[in-house]
Length: 91
Image (cartoon, rainbow, N blue to C red):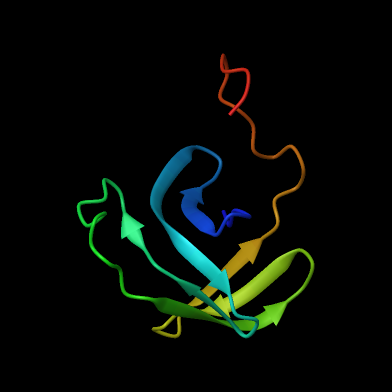
């Protein structure tokens, strides 16, 4: 999930929570990012800045390759797809 404030979280929907997080910056032809895996033992250290190279960009999808050349595809979630767990009124 890319958040408007420059943070992102890696999640696996529908039932796994976040397992990594970092900062991101959209550079047009690339997305620069930092990366920490939970439980964040390196949280207080500066992270290496990496880049995802943008291969294709549409309104609902960004296709990229990571620094190793591995494809990474991001999709826009439909409205209402991220819901609070049962018994929790809101996020």
